[in-house]
Image 1 (tube, rainbow, N blue to C red):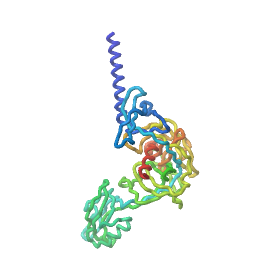
Image 2: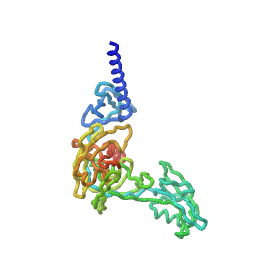
Image 3: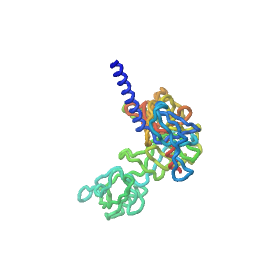
Image 4: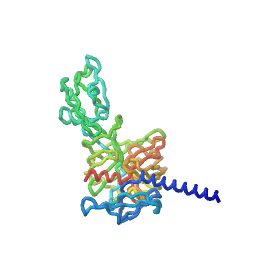
Length: 402
């Protein structure tokens, strides 16, 4: 009898520990807000947590017409975990992308990618470094006048005749002013400051969607960063253009593949923002709405299992390829690595080896809905990588537009 009681106690203890572990996990990973589309009142996350809208629980806020609705989270619909905010929303529809585009970005200000020494008659000097300017800084002004290009900055430094100039930089979203004293370069015959600067970049990506509601487009699902400083490049101006694939470098273990392309002459839209969740802008050519008009899935509607990506992997047009959504990561903050996916389509693996550069932004379709976009590849296995929720990208383009 004592043995039976002991066994029951152990089982109950393990059960309680398991339940509390699941509850603790839910507290950490579940989002603080969930959206219910099409009149739905319940959804499920990770096959464990059930989220049911609670119409009776309304908290009044600033005015009588405003209200915050809540949803109850439970384990298997039985054990309560927490309450989160809920929102009823009309289903959004966008046109899927999948074709390659050329992305041309001119930075807001000049990105400092490094410092260097200038050879003078007195020896080597580094005015930029000595005055306090660092790699990753963005130069906005020289003597209170905006700078728009590297050539413009260099000309102003050369014309300084060695007099002090005031440099305004942006660092960690704060402005700083530095006094820089240019020095005369014996090798170049003009005044220099010892800064390596960048004012533009260009590359190939894949269009994710075009939104007919506000004329916005989204691509990449991650930021365009400087290759040396890893800094996110701020958009001054830029555009997306038509592009054609000129070749493919296949990915392999330890080798990142690449889609090679040439820019066309057709401008499709203008860039507005480059951030960690993608590149966004407004489209000017209605031909960009070439895909199928599909609903955008809430992250809670996505499930592990079969899905498809749309991409142009060989220059012969957009095709649908099979993938597996291996893992879904819910988070209380936005991330570009919301899902782990695996390319299972042998045809695509034969063409590219898996996920390659230029494929970022490829739309992911599941059950007829846009659920996300490809963002990153695993270096040790090019058939696997990360993806971002489509809901995250849509919220970003809405924030930028509205």
